[in-house]
Image (cartoon, rainbow, N blue to C red; front, top):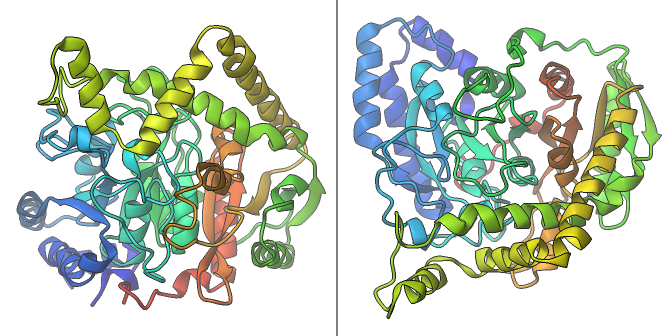
Length: 487
């Protein structure tokens, strides 16, 4: 029996019928990790002793009546966990063994009796699109180990795709949930900005960062989002919007749904296989009773440039706290206090993080602030206006999640600009704060997964999930399993 053969709802029914126990589920997860993670390298830290103890407690209660009772999940390693090492995949936090408190999402999962299997690999401080910038290891794509799993939530995507856990949490600043979900053939949701608390998330770019779920199916994804969404007084950007039942909104009936397809999402740089997968998906939506039209969102052409100016500017500020004084790595080679700051950060940060700090500091300094950073914020407003106008006539926006399928290791890591372009279809939703879902949409000729992106109105995750669910039920893409490390 493997976890990858079941949905959360199926496991829930098995628990109620006493056909399986929480302890058995925990052991199934760790057995699969033992079997495949030596190759996949999704996990940085395991939480085995605590998890098995909690599983025994859940079994002793014997009720299994919570949203995620006994369901094995894992957390990206930039979300803090009390008593469990949290590194952000960076040398500067290699010794951060106990953050002393749990992130709000960690507490919410625990309150729903989820089993926290461990912490997952990522690009260092969530800066990257391939998980190659991790200071500790390179996670591979379960579909083909020569290819990247995407990033920055590569470990989160690979762990689900390889059947090590039933869900994971990732973070999405410019596509870091949706892009690896697409590359690994799973479902990934970036919620509306403010829907899920960021308290306990190590910040990259606070006006863009969001935590979200990664799962095998849309239904599982909706269930996990229900568990982690909601207002949090500890997060000043947290929304007080009421949380509906995303599960109850799921329906195969999408007759009359109006879909917009931005021509900018299918332009230069998007592979023919990706374009074909989107056209096939649109034909399926037509068969299901939806209608679609091509539209133009003219300012999307500037989204990537605006995103990197804003994100790196905020990153420069967010990462200033890592100085070797309060926590993290402190250099042993310093001659005085100023040199200690310099040496600690030089030794602790990787090349990509340094590159983004330098870029961000530059755009925030002097006249550059007005010329670049503030101008990027104005472009961000224009992009939001484009989406707002489209949603006056349409229910959802559809396009590809990524311009290509997964790429090979080392193909883009040495050319940052090329790597940054892999986020060009995902960053607009972050800039506008909109919910966006990636669902499996087929495969390339060589067997690599492709993703379809569904973008919705602010706080309208229900419609996004309904569209994704109807498409998923009408296709079989999500049922295929990777042969390398997944089965």
